[in-house]
Image 1: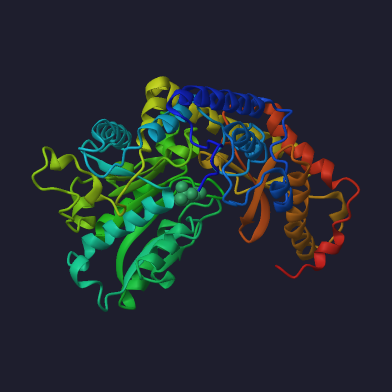
Image 2 (image 1 turned 135 degrees about the horizontal axis):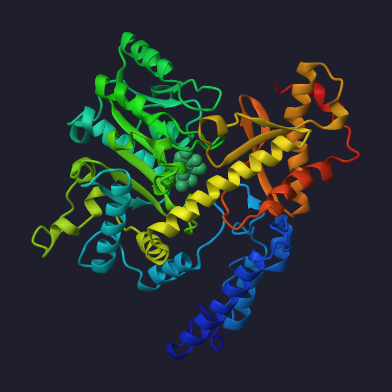
Length: 500
Ligand SMILES: Cc1ncc(COP(=O)(O)O)c(C=O)c1O
């Protein structure tokens, strides 16, 4: 119980003042984030966070002013993912209008299961889904916002399973052994979805990718034939539009030919790169999308909307309901005014957040042209980054996507001077381990934050052009930082690292 005398819950008349104070705090935070001199991260160890903020919920009520100070500290200790120097994940930047959408959604606190409790927001969601569906060339698309791209991909797998095994909801899978095909570059959530569905990871066949990270269609045909020969039932193929590491786009049209011939559900995981559909110049990367059965698309990745804003889109209406409804009469009353507008039974959730509003507001504010410019800018920045990498003597670009129409990632390694003269295998081992060492040093300096990932088995830097506010200065700073932290280091001992 709160101590008497301290008031942690604001009285009605204080709500306005509180929210104004928070608005000022948020504005100050974002202004700072926009300043390229502000460190991206303070890299606080847990002890520092505990030292600066009394995190333990010790039962004491805390006065509002003090509480706001704690919130301010927590913000200061957070990574500035909106900074133009943050290229560590597939999202960065921010859209103030979309942030407002998040606030409003929390303020009204609707739950998206029934129309009666979320009338306006249900229609907002319908419109956003319809617009995204039209971008994919699907006039009657249906869909839902989900808590993240991973969950959207899980729902796609559920749809594929439902199509192949119409009785699965009542009878389960029995002895059937469905098989899912995705490239070796696909996101790990595809495997995890197979785990959640009880199919097991071995149900997911990793189809080899080409030198640009795109699924090899000949290999897909080969793997399907192999699966059939051993009694497996090809159920789903996942084409990725914008792979997590290389940013590659699988050839949807050619994959669709095979999926149609083999009668396999075709899902496009456009969680990251699906926004290419909004740029006339980049849309060809997803040629054939109109033939897919479902698609995942996250607005929180390339469209600057706060997490999460993910969508599962389905070309044929009715399937989500067929797949997920189990008829809970106490919530979904058949005699509702508008039962067809209840989305709850299409979902695998019950209560559901209003994630559509922030996307709707952002889209309304920018219009189609603004959305296109936003997406296009990110692709342009990625090309710019690759040019900078190519120009620097000691940097080497990997899986360069420019010849085939690039995505938004730039993967590269740094040939540290201390490795000159090493024989090739030893050099590769040292580069692999050295990437980790250099990246950690860069991260700890806090000026920029960019990640690393294995590229064809070797750890490499992965830069994501996720922030449209970045300029050549921010892009160059990443390379400068890597060179700077490497100065005076001897990475040769890393050649004996046993990882490769
Ligand atoms: C290609 C791809 N699919 C799915 C996901 C999962 O999205 P989320 O993090 O929103 O669950 C990611 C995340 O990076 C991704 O890159």
